[in-house]
Length: 361
Image (tube, rainbow, N blue to C red; front, side):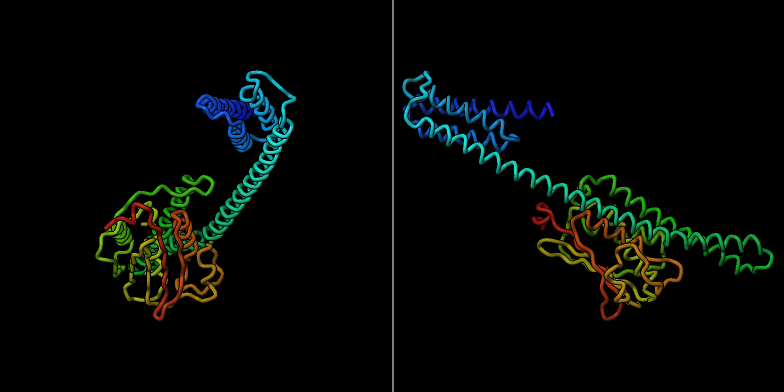
């Protein structure tokens, strides 16, 4: 509080000193019209009211301005004449300017503070909603593969002599598959942690100009290490595309969407990754040719909740992966949506172009 008062006092003194210096400059250059000098001091009063809080600084500044005009710039010079014509009017006018401006600026400052507090509350509510959705998704998506791992390993240990080599191999393969799924879940959770570490009050992720083709290629290579049988057809403009983004996070979005298309579509057809360029943004669409999405589920598909049990995969849900996709894209200032086309499901996210991106050829 003390430092704020010191700053406001210094600001008031500086503004009044500047107004006095400018008025002397006008006065000694031959412009001895008191009305012009009064305008300069009135401007100093308005600025004082804008950059200080409360009414005290404005009232003190008003008194100083009226006395300065009277003492320095009214005949007889360098003498105070409280009886000269127009003095009460000048004083009342300057005081009124100060009070009106102070009242207006104080009201505006309070309104801005209220809006900022409201935005902060909304941001916190949004983060709480995301946290709750992620916890629900984690509880579902982690419990099922863990149950599968425990069940398969227990069966392997308890009934090893009774199983054939083929059955043993199948149990170990199930354990490996569920373990890989858990690893993917951990990567997604670490991604969310990374975003939260970079967030302040709704701040954005740290972005840098990246070549779109290289980001897509890296995402597909990472995914193929996990899913060697996945097939992807990529369609993108022949023109060179550079876009500001966090490449690791966008790769995670592409991996999540392509993996869902492979696992949950119920189709053996390759998935399409279609990249489109526009003057203000670049869009990425992942299209599969399988079962599609239940229309009732589409409005809630990115909130991390499992609202029905009709998933195409019996033991893995899409919840947390899609929720994290939404978090990443929103952190980039983009949008993400889900829909059905004539042959299956389609997920599309759009990333805005920064100023430097729009001049790329």
